[in-house]
Length: 160
Image (cartoon, rainbow, N blue to C red):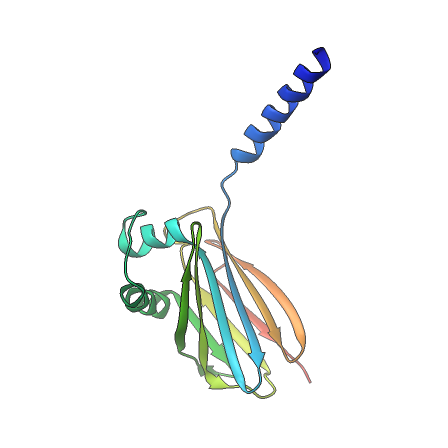
C-alpha cells in the first residue's frame, strides 16, 4: 500500500510538470510533388483564432477562415524561391479539436531549386514563446529550421 501511494504521488508530480509547459509551435512544410511546390501549415487553432480574429473561441465557415487566412499569410509569410516571390494558394483547410491545417501550392513550378528565402512572423508577434518550424524537402534533401521572435528569417541554399 505504501509503494502504491509513492507511485501515485510520483505520477501526479510528473503530470503536473509536463502540463506546466505550454509549447507554442507551428509546422510549415515546403516540399516538391511532381512539378508543383506545396506548402502545408499546421497551427494551434486557438492561437490562430486569437491572432487573426482576436477570439480564441471563434467558429467560422471554411470560406471565412480561408479569406482571413490568405490575408494573414500574405502579411506574415514571405517565401522567395530562386529570387521569385511566391504566392500561397490554399486548396484545403482541416480543423480539428486542437489544430488548423492549411494545404496548398506556392505559385512557382518546381525544377531544380537553388535557394529558398523565408520570412515568417506568423504568431510570433502575438505570442513571445512561439516557434515556427520550417521543414523543407527540396531537391531530395530534407532540412529544418526553427524561427521565432529572435529569428524570423532564414535562407536554404541547395547546391547542385
